[in-house]
Length: 263
Image 1: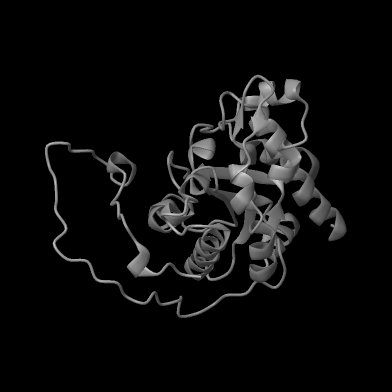
Image 2 (image 1 turned 90 degrees about the vertical axis):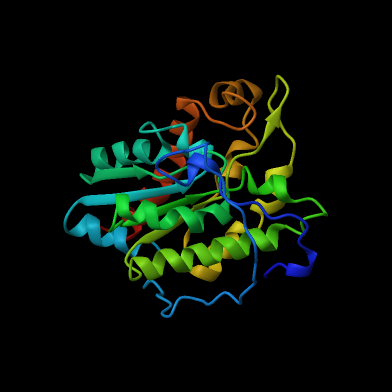
């Protein structure tokens, strides 16, 4: 699904220092003309043999797993203490797999921004074995009648991003989609329901694109208020304990896959 250009009411460009190495506020630019072109899909569509097939290969051979994270401020603010790093600690302990993580999350980003940051992220990690995609916290804020943005549009961006990752990695990288975490409010950290509006499309995208689904949202929603207060540092960002909980969710999926492969 693609948005009708005739319905667009506002177009924004960039996020200042988020897209560039240096931020120069003394300079500005103007856009004189805008032309809409039909988006061309990647020339080759790489389809994996099976979800997490690269993880299986790594576990049987090199024991070194390179993981690239794409996401928003939930990923960005965690730095080196992110959910994938916690999963990696457990993979090393049980399976002897050394996990190297590059965190390419950028605060304020959405699935649409993922297309922009991907080339830079792949320069930091040219040959990832696994790419974790974790968006939704900012995408949900665009779901208002004036934009026409909805779950289907969110899903279309995720599908296109998966295609770009596979094209850039020649289909060698496993792809994991996380369904996000809810935006919460109040002392009991009750969800306001906005992330859920678009996250419902994520399992469909995973099925269509043969990606691995980590249903983080459904795991965070029923948590008792006390746990939520420990896991959230504000209305959306996670504490170190929150990332540990998220890392355990991811590890359970990876561990179950390796056990099923009977390594």
